Length: 165
Image 1 (cartoon, rainbow, N blue to C red):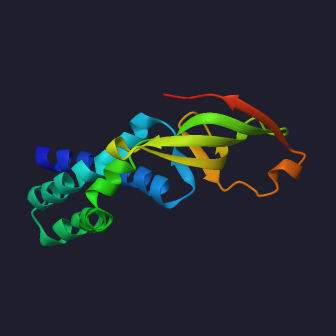
Image 2: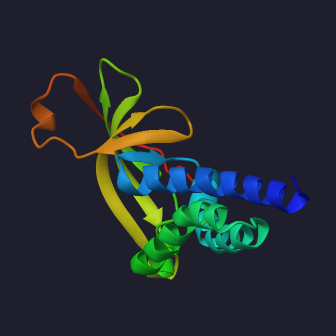
Image 3: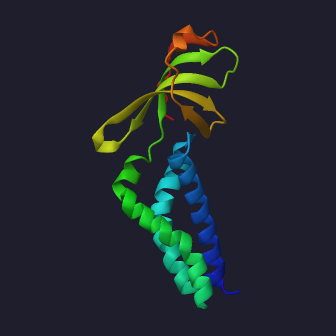
């Protein structure tokens, strides 16, 4: 196997990792909390998609391998063009906790938070969500229940956090 095929396969592996992280963050309730990982996923798909596509077309000699290794990068490129590169850039900032409104009395890793997202020149997005922390890197977000004040498992704390990780 030649050096170009090794490089192409490594690049394809990194591209698939960035695509997986982007898909999990953008299409599911799982969100990336770490700004470094979120930037890798969002900017990685925009940079690695054309590199992987052209690298695979150049590195592999047979038509069959060129087609097989170009399917995901080509579909991703179409997706990027449909979504819009600017929308991807504006979404690449991680949500930062500004205030913890409620804490779950049973589970320390569940909270209701006011979060903000920096969208560059467009200002900030705000949201109030129920957050389940899986680790320091990932969290699951969901809507806040309407009758949260009447629920015994939620303790009102109104704690200012202002994370600027």
